[in-house]
Amino acid sequence: MQAISWKGSYLSLLNQTLLPNKVEYIQCRDYRTVAKAIKNLEVRGAPAIGAAAAFAMVLGIRELAVRPELTDEKISVLAKELKKTRPTAINLAWAVDRMLGVVQRYKQDSDLLDKLEQEALLIAEEDKQVNYRLAQYGAQLFTQPTAILTHCNSGTLATVDYGTALGVIRRTWSEGNVSRVFADETRPLLQGSRLTAWELMQDHIPVTLITDSMAGWVMKQRMVQAVIVGADRITSNGDVANKIGTYSVAILAKEHNIPFYVAAPLSTFDFSMRSGDEIPIEERKPEEITFLSGVCVAPDGVPVFNPAFDVTPNSLITGIITEYGVLRTPYEISIEKLKAKKGDM
Ligand SMILES: CSC[C@H]1O[C@H](OP(=O)(O)O)[C@H](O)[C@@H]1O
Image: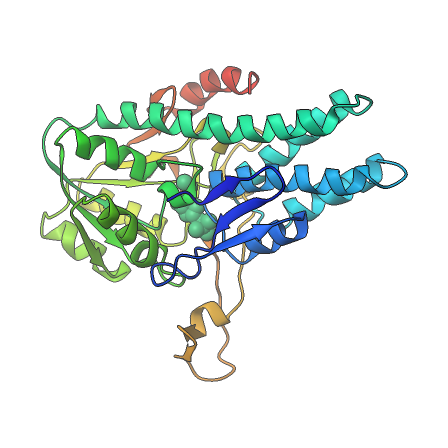
């Protein structure tokens, strides 16, 4: 079940806020509907929102092209409106900038709109192929049945297909080397319980749901032999922004001598940033914490801090699984070698 699907005249999005209880799709016939869906996490996950934003650029420029003049100013406003929907995942800005590059190169061409659609379709297809390759490298890390803990959702629902961390788990499972997956529920929006548990059960992969606060205890009980998570932005030194709670899991893994892997495509790397201290962390509305399924679970007016992401320092990361192989520390050097490949994208 894919998170996003291009239909030629509109973008179909699986509304992830309704899962696992309802499977409903949103038909996005203009870029504003896509922007709203990204902001509301109806579509979410770094690579998925990148691809969605690419198709939003197609819809937006189609709309602008029918007006008297397709000006740089109007195109810039469109790009900025999409980029500001969610600031942490670099994939979104990367995809929008890649589409802007097509506009700048082919703006005078009569088939500009076709070229834009082809580029968005290429971004989506590349993500799928990248995830399959990344999963192969990740599966090579496991040579015997392993219990793996994961946080949030980095599966098919977070990408164009197959997933990153869950892609590694899927491939490792197919090779007989996953004994069990522990899925953190991932408060406050429950991507783990609502999405990861649902995805893995669809694939008949043995998943056990736990609350975020149980991660340490299952590690202490030696029920977990590895951790794999996704990423929203990786800086040049290997620091990783990911869903809030990832840093805590990384600290716990270190304490229990459990390998902690990050799975992410090249499009999630931000070579312009030297360290995770520079990554903008999205803060979201208090109601995501004070309400649960529409029921108030906190005193009215209580002050709330709701960062959607945290940053795990490279010192806590055993390896970063990419479509070019598994990067190891010192990350500055291994990521520098990766940088040359991003120029081709
Ligand atoms: C395959 S990357 C998915 C990544 O995105 C998630 O964040 P959100 O659900 O807010 O879009 C989470 O950080 C995942 O690791």
